Every structure is written in C-alpha cells, then in structure tokens.
Length: 130
Image 1 (spheres, rainbow, N blue to C red):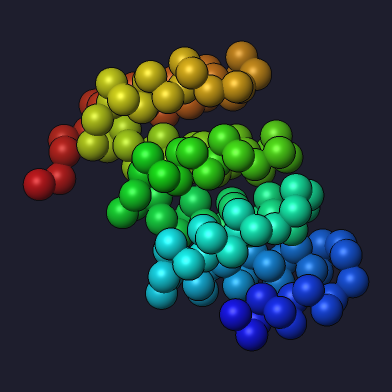
Image 2: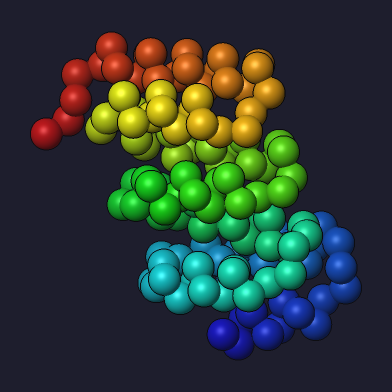
C-alpha cells in the first residue's frame, strides 16, 4: 500500500504509469485479490490500464479466466490486446475450445482476432503438460 501511495505522488505520465504497473506486479505476486481491489479503485486512464495489464501478466498462469476479464477491462487497445494474448495463451494450453470462445466474444479488430486464433491453433498442436 505504501508503494501505491507513493505512486500517486508522481506527476501523470509514462513514469507514473510504469510505477503503478510495478506496484501491481509486486502486489499481484503476493496477493492477487488485494492487487485487483486496488486496481479496481483506480480511475480509468493510463495508470489503471498499465496496472491491469501488469496484473494480467502476473495472474494468467494461475487464474486465466480472471486474467481474461482484466484484459478486456483495459481501455487502451494495444495494451488490451497484449494482455489478451497472454491470457489466451495460458488458456489455449489447457482448453483450446474455451480460448476460441473468448476470442470470438472479445472486442478485437479482425487482425488481432486472427493472430489470437493462430496462437490457439499453434498451442493446440503441442502436447499438453500434465
């Protein structure tokens, strides 16, 4: 919480957003729910988007569904797509059908949707780890 409070003292901009993302990453590794609650409390904008993206990258392996939901909550299209790729990649290795459903339901441009589909197809060709 202290790091989050410190981040709020920084001037708006890329440095502040990067600081928020770092706080989210550290917090998510220790307490994913706490990090998610904090990110939910942030106002819409670059700081929240960077923090949410960081959360996705830190929880996707353990909680792919929640990571997907957070990826979709990111307003910045590029950051949302990057986060979605990561969440879909984690789900595709477990359940390609669910990953495809996510992609079809997601608000993506055709080229992003095609890239996501290609990733799922590739992941489904690999043997699953047990």
